[in-house]
Length: 361
Length: 269
Image (cartoon, rainbow over all chains, first blue to last red; front, side, top):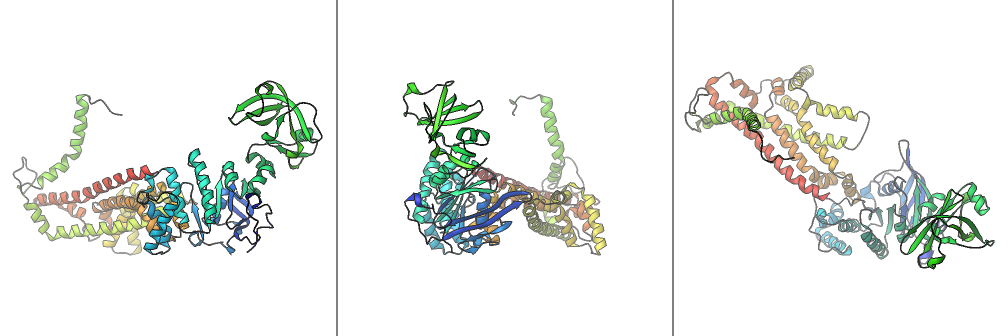
């Protein structure tokens, strides 16, 4: 057993929980790769996931995050590298001998069984006595707030209800690690937000390690203790949501997590005077007047578009006829008359401290 | 698309004429099974009697032929279900070199003329030095009955989410438990449909049987031999009626059972 402290000193600092030096490693990936012929679905991934952690794997489709989850579940075996689950090498161990359970993207509920039978299934195949498994299944139904739907078949439920049954079916086995493969992907926005809150609350209450695959960066940021960002089979960054947003370490992360103005190459040198690519968040830029101070950068351009989002508005400013900067302002922050209009020559500015350097030119 | 109910008289005439032409011989055989007249197809019918049924079921050669055909069809169906399911399970998901060829080889026996299959099997059995008997009939029938089960089961596999199997394994079930608890209930109706069809195909198969039966006489072969004996025509009619019922009823049952099931499954998706 190893403590994860050394790997990530920032873990839990932002969540009010004390940093626990004794924290146990739940899942460890050691330079894991998965190739399909010539395709490198996963390329030398290393990560350590702590017990009780809400760990998200974020990335666009085809980035390898689901493959990574399937390797932990045991549906596939790594081409190279090893996976340790609770300190034990899981290489070659079939899914039914692993102390992990999965909530599938399409729920994968058994259509010929009732919901209660679905939930009981894991206990039944493990030989748990009938009375005990009935009771535990009922408890699981109550936990997901659907105590009366046990006798129905899965197809008689709504998408959100099916999602809860799938969750109950996995949790009734009391796994130490729960794998969730885009579990909220098929739900509408309101339901998704509600389920995010419930899932997070459930995870805190049960203290189970959650490994959560999603392509929705908002979801990953709002729920997770730490997020691993995948791109093209590689890990870009593993960090807390705060660090991921404020200190992205690569151009990809800066672009994928939230919206960012990423400037690379010659224009970066021209604007900042330093030989680095950099990113700056739209909400850190404002309209300014007068000369810059040593701590700020001012550049002039032409306002080409305004998008109104209710709570905030976004202004697209074209610099030197080619670069496009997004500027985000809270809607009520400025009086209507001093705001520029489309076509106006404007000057925008930001603090050098808000910039994130993304590698040398 | 539906027409508004009006169609020209000639179209109606041709349509019903076609149906009549197709089914007239069957009606004749069914009707003359109850005819009192002994010799041939005299018209009009002389009277109604069930005595030919009694006569038919009193004859040992008929009973033997029916028993043999039932046994062959049952064992063929069982073999087809096992082999067809295994073939479908092996082929539906994985793609490997030669998969298309293997699929073609599986489907070929149903497309090949029976006479080719029959001759090929006969020479194969001769080369192997096997005597023609009950088991060579079963082997011959199984070649094309496997396809029927295979087609039904592979279609069902393709519609069954692969995730169900993974979910079962994930919840702690090993391969056998997953097969009996998850896969089998999901393909049950496909097996029923395929099995019934295989049974019917085997029960009235004659061409391949002619080559592989040797001294054995299945019901269709017995019927064929009867054609040279005009005095037994009413009894032959009775037996033909029995064959029709034995194949038609299971097929209809399977059709309705699987059709009802399908609509329920579809709504769950």
